[in-house]
Length: 205
Image (tube, rainbow, N blue to C red; front, side, top):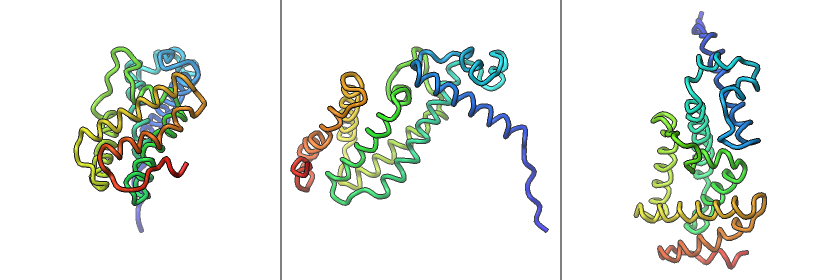
């Protein structure tokens, strides 16, 4: 007869509480901004006394760290699934990659800011929290190599173009698509610079 391994119920409860704390922090950040996250506000939201939070997170930055790692872990999983079904044509594949990142970013401003901007003075993600973002970059590099783009400077330019459009979108047309609609044009400009094959994306709009 097989014997099931003993469950560590205390560890399960502790992990569930940590998830509840992080979820509450995200709710505050999405409502009032990342800077509004405080231990007192998080504790009040989940019905816990502030000192009790220290048994799970020793500082506010530790909560940000968990949020950062969670956000990049979610994006990594989505990117892995998305990149498995990219179009064969390099220009279309690049547009698919950029569009996925745009959709993910626009869906949650607070998450985008924590992942991609230095929004919290003094906060530096831990090595463990940063690891999923490193995996994302490795995935991008492998994917770009498959598309025939091997210079790391070209990947840097691709990320800068996308990040610039996102910043303009958030700053000037939140909830709209003014800069999102520029993606095919920007991808064509990037592809032309690299002499990538394929008909222009703009002709298909």
